[in-house]
Image 1 (cartoon, rainbow, N blue to C red):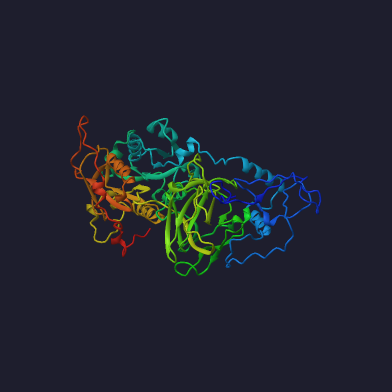
Image 2: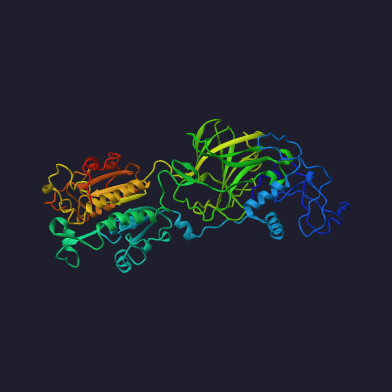
Length: 611
């Protein structure tokens, strides 16, 4: 239970709260209080009953509340009425309603035991294991990891010390090619039963080199000599699953499997209204009534109060310092399943300000009275604004005091959210914009964000030529075999293009690399990057692997589609001196000139390919 530190020794406030627990305190309904009864100030109050609300009760083995004299209970002030900072009757009914909303019907024995435990013990937030820390640090998934490009991507990542996980269909082959200690998961993108979310926990980026297999009709040598020469030098056919299964359905399966771990450009909606999307949460009031105060708040949905006349959430109420109170808040029930937002960098709130300073409190423990990771934010009166709170700015707080030895914020295990308007900041400091009386904060959404500049999360190896089959006015005799034979190869390029579109529509920041004909030559030749799907030529698989890894860390490559080839013509082999290899390129030089929105599909809009 979150309570602001009204009785903190670091402030000048004094609380007249007493805690009694003994069946012998009161002998009967009319007896006076024993002079031996002990009362004490609670430096860390859990359940506090104001002195003005004490009432004599019959002795029971439970919490006993004593009221000095019987006075009629005043009706609670309406939520729109200002409450003056004087002693007022405490609302026991609202207190019990708060407990019931968050905990269900309270069990008196366990309730009292919990109270004593919380009074004399520090909170014990969840400690992250080494494995969990690794899983939230950002792993690159490599699909098609045993293929010509994929295996080279693995080598580049390993040499750079970048943590990665390989996805392959054949474990024996993968460990033989990639090493016995490789972080490996076995799965097939064409089979959803093998693509379970657990296999992708901790994955933050992906390089997808999975592709339909095209091989010589007449077969190949054990070392795939014909395949390595390129499709230009043999009569091709599809080997294994069809292009539709691999390039389109497989892509859809892959995106779905990664949906919980790879960040979306526009963030993950936790609450609110975003276009046609709506996500509700069960909010309940958690005000200073839990420690004797009279402040009162609520969270409602205003159907027309949103930025464009649509619905919005509304945190509203009346805050009062009467009875040494001074805070209101609304908190969600614990989520049925923790939210994993570790792919993101912070929370973004869309609010209409009223000039006050508020707090967002995030919990990573299902326990009730525990550390809340907290950030304050200021609002501008009568203006809609986006408030970004970085995970790194969240302060571990327990009853308005910073917990210096608390574990780092675990963004993979969000249990509940809370909004608060309070007189108190942290560690004895006060809210500089606090004013008693009514307040309201329209809140249209809480979602996550990824910080700028945004780098690609999904790098996909596609193919040059995907928009060329049936392109009007195109001389097919001058095109690569895959373009000329698209229909005979079960529309391989058409389904590659449909797979690309799934990535573009997914909301994941991406780069789509379209290499020309792939070769076994070394990397190092000068390159030509182009857009619009017009060039032909060749390029080394090793070079493509390096381009893919470089794209992951380049905002210039984000949301770009491009073709790439070397300047070396097909008729000329490219070699290097192993003792003096060319330096690795700065691929940003190429990425900087790329433009968004150019795919080559522009020429097909009036002549779509029918499948």
